[in-house]
Each structure stands twice: as C-alpha cells, then as structure tokens.
Image (cartoon, rainbow, N blue to C red; front, side, top):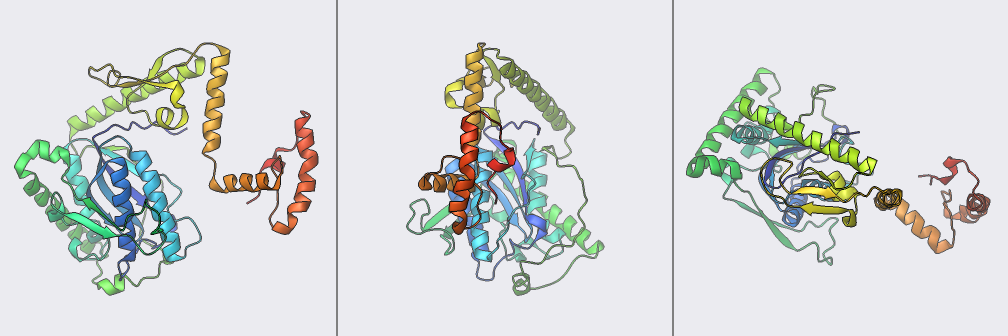
Length: 402
C-alpha cells in the first residue's frame, strides 16, 4: 500500500513526468504542434483546477514543472491534464501504446524559498545539463525564460489534432500566465525577480560546465533537434532504484525538520482515522489534506468537513468521517466503497457492459470477434444460471478477455 499524500491549497510543487521506455514522444516539432498541445491542454486544465504555473521545460522524454496548487486539487489536475496530453500525442504521433511510463508522476513538495529557487533553476537548466543547447532560450521545445516569470502570458490556439472544434470544452484560443511563486514575493518583495534571475543564471552556468566536463555537450541546430524520430530512445545513464523524494528543502536544515515533523504528524493522524474507520469508531477525522479517502473513495454522504480553526494539522479543517458502530452501517460503507471502485473501472469495461446490455445478455462473456457473439452467448448462459443458483464458477470465466 502506498503512503498517503497530503494535498493542501497554496503549496508549491516540483513535478516530473516521464515517457514510457524513454521514447522521444515529446520531441519538439518544427511546425510547433507538440508544443501547442502542451500549452493548450495545460492552459485549459490549469484554469479549471486553479493551478498557477511558474516554470516549465519539456524535453523529448520527460517534462519538468514548478507550479502552485492554489485550491488543493493537484491530483485531479495531473490526472486530467496528463490523460489529455497522452491522447493527443497518440493521435499526433500515431502511437498505439501508452505514452507515459507506468510509474506515478513525481510530485515533490517544496518547503521554503531555497527549494523553490533550486527547483526553478534545475527546470530551466535541464536542456543545458543534457548537452542539447548552450542556453535554455535556444531550445525549440516547450520552455520559459527567467524573464517570463511574473510577466509573460502564453496565448495558444486550439491544436488541429484530437480536439473537436465543435466541443464547447475546447475554446479556439486560451491563455496561461507564467506567475511568480508566492513564497518568493512574500520573502523578497520587489527584489524577487532579481534574486530569481541570479539563481537561474548560476544553475545554467553550473549545468553547462557539468555537461562539458562529462563530454555530453553536443552543438546542434533546432532543425536537427526537431527531426529525431520519435521511436528513438534515450540511452543516457539513468540510475536504477534511485529514491523518489516527496519533499525538498533546498538544503535548509530548518525546513527539512519542519517537513519531517509535518509529514510524521499527518501519517499518524491518517493511520489513526483509517484504523478507526475499519473498526467502526464514530466521528474520527482524517487530517486536513487527505485526498484518497476524502475526495475519491468515500461518498459525500459519509464525509463531513469540520472547520474547527486553530493551528496544527489536527486543527486545520479536518475531514471527519461519520462512521457508525453498527454492523449495518459498516456494511453500507463497504457497499458504497465497492460501488465507487466499480465506477472507476476502465472505459473498455464500460463499453463491454453497454454492448452486452444492448445484446440482452445478463452476465459477462468472452469473445474476440463479432462472429463469435452467438457462440459466446450460448457458452455464458449455463454459467449465468449456475451463478444465480448460488454455485461457485471458475473466476477466470468472468474476466473479459482483452
């Protein structure tokens, strides 16, 4: 079981998403289509979920972003935004397989201004560190300049691929501002831009020296960078089994201690609430920022928000679960969870169920071609009758073959 995540509003994150098997699917296009897909989808979905973008750079095999989750809806943003980018890339590249790797998106919470400055510097210097260009401004793909942060608004038109112009969800033109991180404004005020510019310049210079000393600096043209086949794969060294951190403090020891204390407290409260829910104890709250249980699994009728005020994770708008002690109520909770998980099944399964309903078939069936439908119907009928009578059938029969 993965560890729970705390999703709070106003938190700044460093996001990394990698392509499956390190293919060059995000490679910039000479006509700008791939870049247009990223900017358009991100602008639409960021406006929907209240995401403020500060820095971004998209290489051929992965992308980095520094953003602030203003409303505490980061998982929903990443889920919908990445799904749309993947679908658009499949159409644009004529790619039949998955686009992003199966591993989850790396979400690193940034504690303090040192972590924010370091994350932005790393993001904008990434193409230089890879030895692709001498300066980030020379990268033909998705990127921003340090001078864009806090000043530029990206305006992009709807791509000609994947997005239906007749669908009102996809406007013809959208915009997304490149904003200054709130923590930098609060700490440095009017000097925030100068501090950020100095930090990014140092990161770019360090990345350039590292690339040259490692012998990976390749001087090339934008046309050549945009012509690499997307089926190619990166062969650069990548450590296997490296740690995937969940927070960063930029070397600030005080922020490291703060992050550890807050996360330890969150995990303790979360485990206490989950154990209480399993045991049927009434009114034990999940801590503030709980996402999975409070926002995805439990139905709204079983979740209440108790805004008690005060300080500390246990006092900041705790999410209380009205769990009851009776067996009937626990059974109702289990049934509600089963229904919610069932609703989150794959689209292919939904289509299969709709097709079977249209054919008048009660139970699941296995078939691969339309010509096999009659045979499959005859094969599944005895099993359906046996299941109704209460006998146990082989579970493999009830899984639709892909």
